[in-house]
Image (cartoon, rainbow, N blue to C red; front, side, top):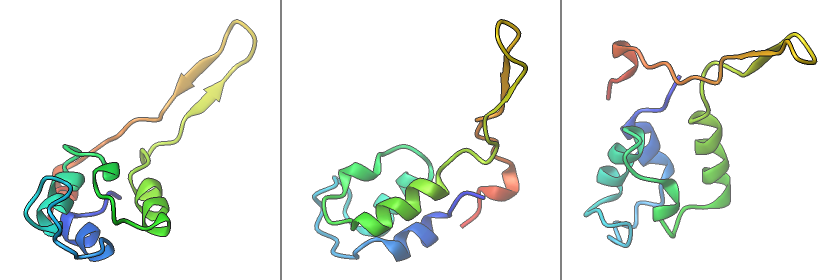
Length: 88
């Protein structure tokens, strides 16, 4: 399940430096949760936090390859978001 903006905000450094282009870390986290900005915009985020957020933002459905040779079918690797997952 994707992380909410508040959960992402708790993982950020809380410097409110505005170097990412947003007035607060919470505002940046909300845009990050909505996938409207990249994590690389925050210069103060640690490598550990980057790894945690990258794994949390991975598509919930893994890529599966079926068949072989010329008859290969790949399914999955999709981001499915339901309304109940878009909560604060």
